[in-house]
Each structure stands twice: as structure tokens, then as C-alpha cells.
Length: 312
Image (cartoon, rainbow, N blue to C red; front, side, top):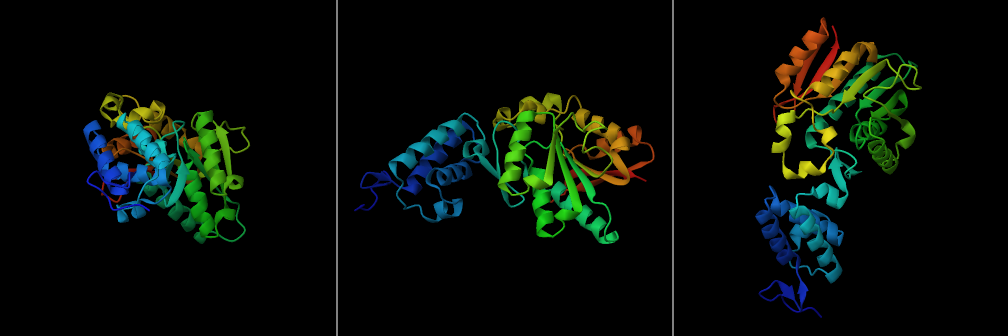
């Protein structure tokens, strides 16, 4: 029988959740974590197999020796800067749990805005077109973990609209594509997404090739000279998934150059951008695609987040 906790936060020699959380928070705070308490709670939940809410609600719960050892080992990894998502092996995105590791960028909450806009665009088009039309073709360029493609597929399945679209996910990294396929399998949409290794877009003679009704992309947009100033956790992610070149828009510009051949006549491109790139993307599109429109859509924080590009 476990006795009451002593001053060290143990009951009968067994460490308690609250004491371990304090220990972890102190360690991560000293290591420079930006969110030490949250990190400790997530890692504790990972170690004991419980949700964060349960961890917070039961600080008096005893933690077994094996779980405590796992937790402390994970704390040491986090103290070196490794992202919590990589340690846990998962990241929540659009209400879904995605497997993540160093093969691809960790999905960011900001990218959920892109998914929302894409889903709304698809539903608008399906609602305005006559029954029996050819399916809408969607391409997720630089899919990484597959978060955008999979989240859209799951959302459209929930709206009974998945049969009306064809989805292609591309990436130049075969390792990232393997991770994306794993996530598609995990969410039971692997049979509804085609995957292709490609530099941005597949060649014109590929089985799934342009033109597309909807081009989606969360491509690298961090300025090269800003890479060193990113949080330490970002150093564990693939640099190629973050570094957007001198102005942060080099990779996006290459995709913009290919939009005339990639988009159907009434097609739309939705491209995620950095919060400080709203004016720059408008100027880039005006210079490279005369006669096209570029509307910048804000995220929930009111910051520029998605460029909506189409022929006028």
C-alpha cells in the first residue's frame, strides 16, 4: 500500500506526478525551453500513456519506475532542443494525430488556415457544378508529413465529398513521402491519395499531371539569414523544408513561375507565406504573372498567411 507523499514528492518511495512535473519544468526552464511546463506535461503523458488533461488533474498519482525513467530520458532529449513532437512521435493537426519524425517538417497550427481555405474552395466548386462532372484535381506540393493532403481527404470524407476529388501529394524527398504514406494509411485515406517524387510538380507525361483545379503548398519561406535565429528545436527539422533562400520566397517563386501550366483555366493556388511576406508575394505575382490576381488571406491572429493566386 502506498503511503502519503513525503516532502520529496514521493509516496512510499514512488515518485508522484506533481513532483516529477516540477522537476521536469525546472530542468527545461534552465535549458532554455520556451514552454517548460507544457513540455513537461506532454512528455509525462507520453511516458505514462495518458492525456495531458489527466496528468494536470492528478498531481498525486504515483508514477512507476519504468515510466519515470522514460520521462526523465525524454526530458534530457528535450533539454538538448529536440522538439517534443519528435520525442512523442506525433503532432496534432486539424484535430488529427500525425506521425512525425526528422524526415519532415512538423505541422504548424498556422497551416490549418490553408486546409480550411482549401476545403471551402472544394465545397464551393462542388456545390456550383452540375452532377456528374469530372473530379476536381488537387495537388499538395511539398507534402512533407502529408498533413495537408491527409487532413483535406479526411475532411472531405466527413462531408461525403471525397469521391468527387482526386488528390496528388508531391515531395522531392523520398523519405518524406514514406512518412506521408504512413500518415495516409493511419487515417484510412491511402487509397485516395496518389504520391509522387517530384521537384514541386510532376512532369507533364506523369500519370497524375497538370492541369490541376487546386494547387496547395506550404513551401519553405524562412529567409536564409534568419535560419540561425530560429528556435533551437527547428535545428532538428530538415533545413530544406524551412530555408526559402535570400528573401524567403525563392522556392515559392519557382512554383509561381509554373502556375500557368499547372493550373486549369479557372484553377486556384493557395500558398502559405510568412507573416511578413504579404506585400512581397503580391509584388512577386504581379511581376511574374501579369494579369493574374493575388489576394492575401490572414490567419486567426490577423497576420498574412495564405496567398490566393488565380487568373483574372
